[in-house]
Amino acid sequence: TMPDLADPALFSERAAIGGTWRASSNGETLNVDNPATGAVIGTIPACTAQDTRDAIAAAATTQAQWRRTPAAQRAEILTAWHGLMMRHADDLARIMTLEQGKPLAEAKGEVVYAASFLKWFAAEAERMEGETLAPAADRRILVMKEPVGVTAAITPWNFPLAMITRKCGPAIAAGCSMVIKPSELTPYSALALAVLAERAGLPPGLLSIVTGHAREIGPELTGNPIVRKLSFTGSTAVGALLMRQCADTIKRLSLELGGNAPLIVFDDADLDVAVAGTMASKFRNAGQTCVCANRAYVQDGIYDAFAARLAAEVAALTVGDGLAPGVQIGPLINDAAVAKVKAHVEDALAKGARIVGRPFAIDGRFVDPVVLADVTADMRIACEETFGPVLPLFRFTSEEAAVAQANATPFGLASYFFTRDLDRAWRVGAALDFGMVGLNTGTISTATAPFGGVKQSGLGREGGRVGIEEFLELKTLHVALA
Ligand code: ADP
Image (cartoon, rainbow, N blue to C red; front, side):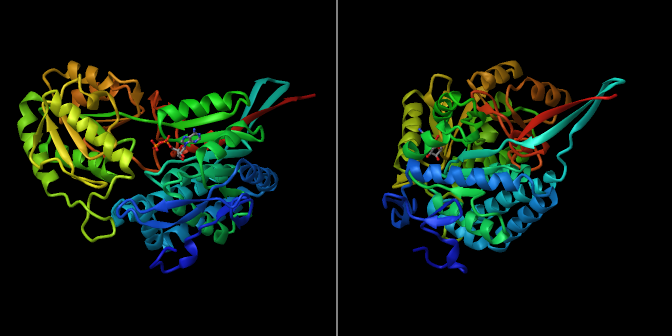
């Protein structure tokens, strides 16, 4: 079991299904390991399709009551849940680092970020306003908002808590229930969240955490007609598959998929700001976020200075076990992730790129961060998401060319650019074909703002005032006046 928690009850090796903590119906389990050491942390139930159906059935029963609870009461429970997350932040961070690998300080940051969605949507619960229309003297129309109903979520391993709260926060605020399949790589953060949900007073069965294999649980979540909506964060390939699987029952979908974020540094940028923003965007979570800068386009006049500054910053990063003090880059999530990063770097070097500063080195799942210069569009790293601590620097001359290259991708999640020219700021901000644009910043994730992509990066937005709309249906009541 999980050592060293102030509150050991936060570590559960049972799934939370329909208000009970249980093993899978066939007794099978899966191991979960610590990416830093390879040691097994514990097991989780390998839940079956039947277990998933049980969770969905309970979600339907509970939701019928929950939708009738006053918004203020829903808000109160979400607020209490937020408070519990904050109170147990150290334990939640520790669980996250053990199963996911990110440095403890980053894990703590994610706990606070994840909790912020519960607080944000607690407030939104009380602001679900409709409309009244009067198209004719004898006619009134009420446009009312109602919860979608039973919803499902499938979430990834890179943000084991935040990718869940930004789905279940608005769902629960709206009056929906939710069945969640967390990543099998990071289930303990999700289960800890469910322990706290119970303590906060969430009705049993409103939120289930079904752990195990995607191939067992996924088809039930997408095929079951009781589930009215699926919210997914993960790869574009899996998102497309889930979209097809949801077609037969016409489910609503929110998809937050892959990105291939460009970052443009213009000659007129503030070098300090550009370097700091690039480091924040690129190396968070060892480069394993869907909004991490994947491609840096740097203008001729600033290229060498920028490369030198970045090389120095990257050389100073400490790589190691996320639990060790001072570590900034933890292990990658698994061997496949390491192999992909290695392949991208080797491909780039074979095609003429060169390493600037810190040499490239791999030790098990620990990958030293690396800056590549002279990167060109024919390299794999130019068009594929690397999801690791590699920063490729492309050189450009004209603004038009930089924007064209930045947009030359089927993805459209995040983008960043650095400039001090006001005209250029507006022009490039408008021209970048992405759901999110950071101007002179490398950080764009906050509960306050809508988060999501265009093109093959997904459908819908999470967070912001619109985040709750994803879990609401409109009903119009047409009233004939006498
Ligand atoms: P990543 O590349 O970030 O691991 P994935 O899309 O593979 O992204 O995984 C994101 C989530 O989707 C995880 O919870 C994973 O278990 C789940 N998943 C993967 N394949 C399927 C599938 N075929 N059906 C349902 N869920 C899946």
